[in-house]
Length: 359
Ligand SMILES: Nc1nc2c(ncn2[C@@H]2O[C@H](COP(=O)(O)OP(=O)(O)OP(=O)(O)O)[C@@H](O)[C@H]2O)c(=O)[nH]1
Ligand SMILES: [Mg+2]
Image 1 (tube, rainbow, N blue to C red):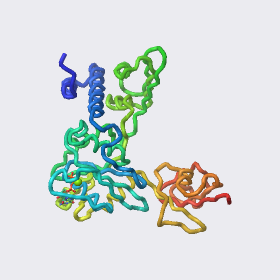
Image 2: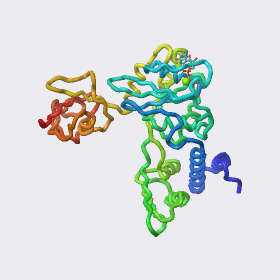
Image 3: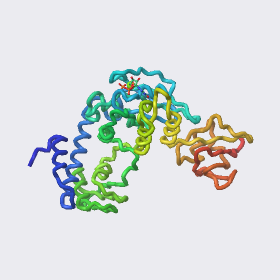
Image 4: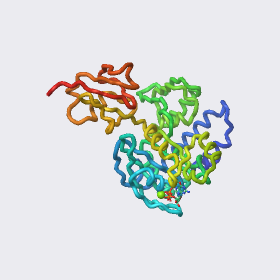
């Protein structure tokens, strides 16, 4: 048997293993082993884990991280979008520390982080990559920045994946419940063979457990993630900066491929970018109405899916105790001034008025 001591060995082996039903278990075994080894390497880096080597305190309503290879224009974008004034340069690795700035948009204060440029192998610790990536993991939105001359999309996304970041995906619905005896039982809605799943659980070190897969998982990778449990699921945006050097056709092609062309230099599409960041963070604005007046200047900033109760929690004073009922006008209401309770889910640009008990 060939050596299985390094990620490279294992990946080579995986490559050589044909994809079919008969090799499914073997492929699953190799993939879990690769994931484990990568995780181990990541943990072995100094000062890592989720406490970053860089000191950045989360501020504002939410945090977006600009991530990309050197010289794509991350710092230039930070400076165009926020109040920050980072150093930019024609040479690589101008930025050596995490630089925060605040983007004020639609009444929200959005923290934008500019991080040092990544290099290949970042997730394994090259060029401080693990620390940079753990800053990204702690943000709420990944903003990938590319240079149109040198896209290297897969390379960047591989680094993010190796750092345990899963973009634009929901966590796999897999639970493992350990028990006293009885071996490993599997209940699965997926296409994967129960035996494969059982073996993966064994590889994870389980002896007696109920494994429940509540979604139609069809890939070993997703199951590996489900077992690992420490993946970070985040929304993402893809930008192509330096659009000032692109033709209209090139821009159209990028757009069709899901990349927003922007220019930190000319400001092209930065207005669209601000909206995308706001929406990508799943933020919503709720306008409070008091004594017949709607305050559109300073909306309450909440997250999608949050309720009247969450809104109460954001307001000063002990609103929750005084709450009697609320009225909502907007997307979330069936008709204007609809009377709702605490559990009502709010939507972007709803107008909310509260009926409170007097104190
Ligand atoms: N033409 C053009 N050049 C840009 C644009 N944005 C940035 N640049 C140039 O690209 C170079 C790199 O910009 P930076 O903002 O320092 O890039 P960075 O991604 O922060 O680089 P590192 O900190 O080294 O990772 C500089 O020479 C910028 O002037 C843009 O929109 N258009
Ligand atoms: Mg920079």
